[in-house]
Length: 412
Image (cartoon, rainbow, N blue to C red; front, top):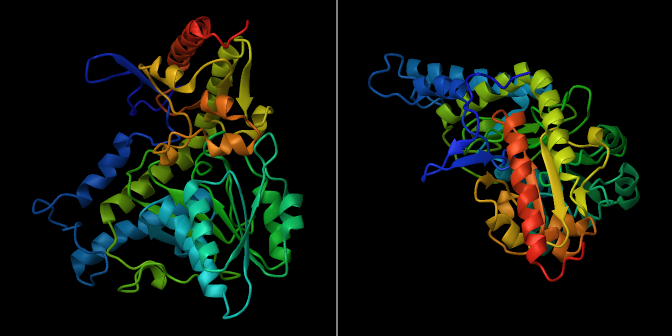
C-alpha cells in the first residue's frame, strides 16, 4: 500500500541540501496539493469571474457562491465524523474549539451562586488544561484525573469522580504525545445517562480512527485542518443539535455561526479543510493500516536497544496508528535531539515546546524527569515509507549507542 502519489515523500532537503526525514506529523502536516488546488479559486482576485473571494455572509451573487464553498466544506467535515452539517461550527483551530467548548459550556450552564464542576485528565492538551485552570480562577471546581501507566483514563475513574455539580467532562480521544486511545465510545453513553455534557478533543483521532457521532453520544468535539493535510488557521467544533448542547459565545460580533462564533469566515481555509477531510474519508481505511505497520516496524528496530521504554499502551491496537513515543534510558534528552539533525522528531507536543521542562504527559504516566526528558515522539504520515523508517531507526540506534558510550551514568 503506497502513499498517495500527489504527496511529496520524505526525505526532504533542508536549506543546506541535507536530507531531512520528517516524522513529526502529529505536530503538523504538509498541505496536500489536492487541497491547495481546491483552495486556489477562493484566493484568486480580479481574474476570477465568479468572484468566489467575496464575503460568504453577503447576500449578492458572489457572496452566495462563496457561501456554497463554505457549506460544501461543512458537509465534508461532518461526513468524516458522522455528524450533520449544521452541527459544524467553524473556528480558527483546535485551540479555539477547545476553549469555546469548555468555557462556553460552563458559562452557559452556570447559575449564579451554584457550584459547578469539570472532570478532565492530567494528560490533556495544554489548551484544555489552561482553559480549566482559568475557570478555576472563576470559582469552577476541576478534577484532574491521573491516567494509568499506559496513558489511559478508565471510564470508571470518570464515573467515580462525578459529583452532583458535575456539568462537563473533557477528554481527548487520542493523546497527542503517546497515541493512547481513550475509551470515549464506552464512556459517552454513561455520561448521557447522567445528563453530563461530554467534550472530546479529537484532533489526533479524526481521519485516523472510525468516528460516528450518530452512534456515539458525544456533545462537543474539536477537530483541526492542519493535522489532516489541510491549511493552518482553521478548525471546527461539533455542537450536537439533539439533545442540544448550548454554549456561551467567546467571540462576539455579527452573530455568525449560529451566534456561537462571530467573525468573517476565511473561505479559502474552510474550503481547504473540507477538501482535506474529504480526502481523509476516502483514504483512511487504506492509509491507517499502512501507518500501523510502519509504526511497528520502527518499534521493532528500536526495541533491540537495551532499556528502551514504549510510552503508552503496549497493545498496538490501543494506540493511534501514527504515533510512537519512546524513552531511552542513560541518554541526555537534549544531547539526543541534537545528535539527530537529519530527523524532524519531537520530544512531545509542539504546543508545549516553549518550555524546557520534561513532558508533563510522561510525568503523569509515572516517568521520572530523566526518562521523560530522554524521550522522542515519532509521528508518521503520508510521506512515511519503509525506507525512511529504516533510515531513521538506524540514525537513532547509532546516536543512542554513541551517547551511552560517552555517558558516565550508563552501565551496560
